[in-house]
Amino acid sequence: MTKLISQYFFRGLITALPLGLTVYLFYIFLRWSETLAMQVMHPFIGDVYVPGMGLLFGVVGIFLLGFLVSQRCVGKLFSLVELPFTNLPVVKSIYSSLKDFADYFSPRRNEGVQQTVVALKMPGHELEMVGLVTRQNVDDLPTGFLPGDRVAVYLPMGYMIGGYTVFVPRAWVQPLDMTVEEAMRSSLFAWMSRTSNTDQPTSP
Image (spheres, rainbow, N blue to C red):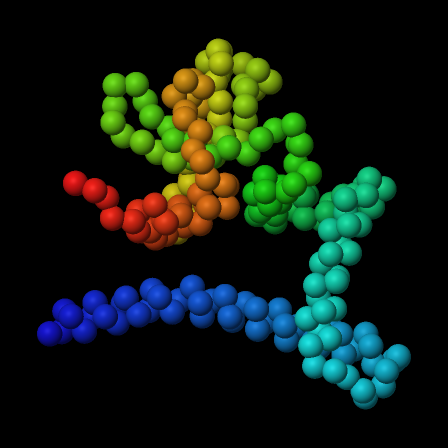
């Protein structure tokens, strides 16, 4: 009986946790944007304030920020703002890692490079690993890497606690029909969530 209660409790916790975190983060963003909007708009509209203007203010602000940093001149100016974050020893490592991760999903990131989800399988082995192709060739890597038609594949670990980047022959990878966002979301919870294909019963 105790084991059954524990199972139900943790099952409920796992179900509620993603929703709770999403709502909490949205609440923090909404509260921050409402406070900022009230301070900015107060000189113009006084005490008259319509709830929800903060959310609109935040969405428009994010859109304008994305538009501005897409411009070449503003991008150069933004690089000056980044200087403290890219030169301090500890901050540099954290900021650079987060920025590189965000740039990987950026629509303007090396428009000629296609973000591909692949299944990595070594010849003679039935083991498959799902990863993301992060580099289509290794010609410009430092001396010491194996030559040939090879690609870099990032293998994310469950619950986003890290991952590995491996350099393998291109023949070892097979593209999968799924987006990068779907692969990362599935990897986040170790592929425990069922897809639409696995929900359908299979015929004997």
